[in-house]
Image 1 (tube, rainbow, N blue to C red):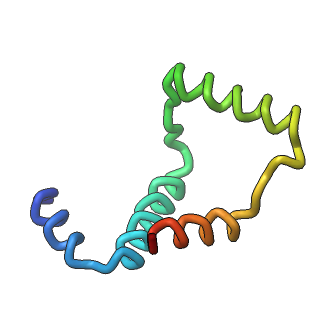
Image 2 (image 1 turned 180 degrees about the vertical axis):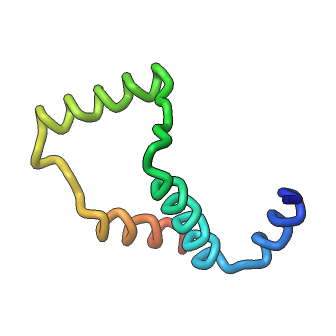
Length: 77
């Protein structure tokens, strides 16, 4: 597969279409199931920090809908 040609074609898609493509690619990776993605030490530490923060402040969260709304609002500015 010519990645460069694929990227050129992907750039012609709308942002929404590209996001759906990324989601489909990620879903196909997850569907392989047996292949475990290895975390770096930095990723492990960040995950541990976030889990500890959530355990200490379980109500300090926002919904995915709020995250999307905030991102869309920022992109319009």
